[in-house]
Amino acid sequence: MKAAVVALACIFSFGFSPTAFAHARLVSSTPAAGGTAHGPTIAITLKFDSRVDGARSHLALMMPNGNIKPLTIVADGASELDSHSTLSPGKYTIRWQALSTDGHITRGEIPFVVR
Image 1 (cartoon, rainbow, N blue to C red):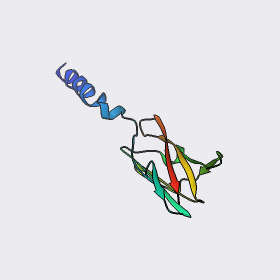
Image 2: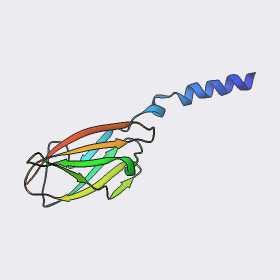
Image 3: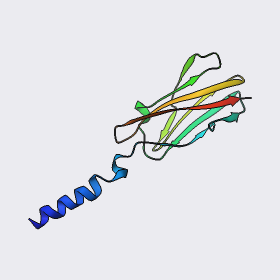
Image 4: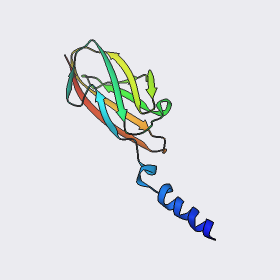
């Protein structure tokens, strides 16, 4: 009986902790939101506060003319997604969707300018 109580206490204290169910939140990006990048080749890096599944995450660029260009994730570290693209001067927006290891999807947009 005592072992069952200890097991339940562990489940409730560790199994339901807020970090166990945390979604991957974007911590930083290159280029930064609202920032300026100098082209023509732009390195794109998104860093998250937890592990993400690069194979099931997505990156795309909204071009200055409104078209959407899918980006290939060329490397995915434990908590980051990397890509690159050759871009002309103009206003762009990175659209991202990350699948975290808790199985939840987070998304966002990062506007930036290429000079």
